Amino acid sequence: MTAMQSHGVSLPLRGSLSSRSLPRRYFSVSSLSWTKFLTGARNLPYPVAASSAFTLSDGELESRGFRVRRSPEGLDVGALNDVFARVGFPRRDPDRIRRALEHAGGAVVWVEDGKGGSEEGKPVAFARATGDGVFNAVVWDVVVEPSLQGIGLGKAVMERLVADLRAKGVSNIALYAEPRVVGFYRPLGFAADPDGIKGMVYSRRNQQQRKSR
Amino acid sequence: MHLGASVASSASSLCRTHHLACRFQDPDRSWIYRHSELIPGKRRGKVVPLRANFWESIKSGFGKNDNTTQVVEPPTSIEEEETLPLEIVLLERTRPDGTFEQIIFSSAGDVDVYDVQALCDKDNWIFQVGWPRRPLGKIAASLKNSYLVATLHSICRPSGSEVNDKKQLIGMARATSDHAFNATIWDVLVDPSYQGQGLGKALVEQLIRTLLKRDIGNISLFADNKVVDFYQNLGFEADPEGIKGMFWYPRY
Image (cartoon, rainbow over all chains, first blue to last red; front, side):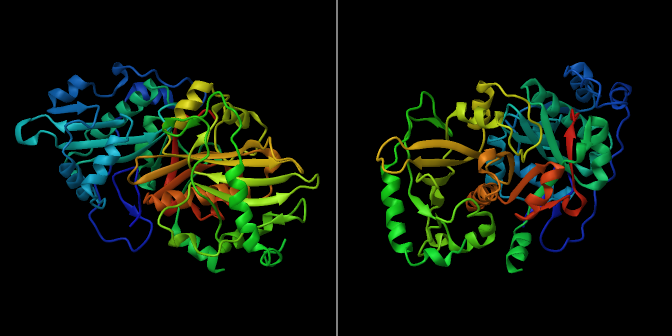
């Protein structure tokens, strides 16, 4: 089953949608430094990626019991799969996930439950990006553990992922957002269909329909 | 242009295609970047003609300029082969001036970075968003880091001569991927003098086939408004289930 997923709600393109409990709505923590960039955003220079530009700093997250990790090292893939399942994604072959993480070109950010011990390696928030490391990147699999949504963890991983990509010089960062989470990405600096550009996905079913005509 | 006209000679033209392909030499290059490794310019892989029903879908694009275009038809289905050939002859034709030309699709990523830059610089029909002039080193890096680099080359042999085949990059498309789930197509380019012949369509079709063969389930791209229809005709859907493509601080 093919699923389009940048964000933590899976949307299979083929087959019927199975009923599932949806994750809690995101409440974006409004931050003055970010909304300042939104007004006439297209014409202003984009924010410089400095750690002081993050809504919640690494230290603030640590004090709340969360540790930010900027590489897939130490990530428990089984636990990641569990989070996927809890947000409504299909579970995926762990070997494939490992392969995807290896080929992320270093663009993986996740938040670890800071308790340590048995919680080591368990992600409570995650995001990764694919790309050529120079021009383009696409963000995939942005998830936050449902019971921990709404406190800024999704924003934390996204801000850092974008910063890491920008630091490499990648200027074209894209993602696919389900309608209900477009609002989550906007305060982070993302705009939908800029200048009429459309995100498109290949569908084998469309292909077959075409040929039978 | 009729496929039927070439049926009678398909057997001999098939043989001729293979025979000719072996004799083509790559021109001397100072720097050819082979996807994921540096190699001296060398053609590799079987050159195999295309499935007949693939031609049905793009037939209308061919044969506009001359009536001596010959379509090479394969006797068997490619699907039955175990490995997808790296190179495919898309078409062969004899031009009005007697030059014999072949258009070759390749997924080997055998591409000269200078050629890519030259192709980018041409005032071509850009299937892809955002096109500032790109430094050579970055182009090379972007190709190296791409999961798949597909090319269209034209190989011309002037009539009556056996040497100096001219090989020219006339199209390119690449895809980035996580090697497991998703691939995104970028930078679909076709030389302006080769547009309007269905080659862009062929390029993307072959790219998709290659990705599907490699078991990459989710193929995506971002299309400029003007080319949304082009990709729709290839099987892409815009805003599937309302999902929106979003960009970080786009400068458009």
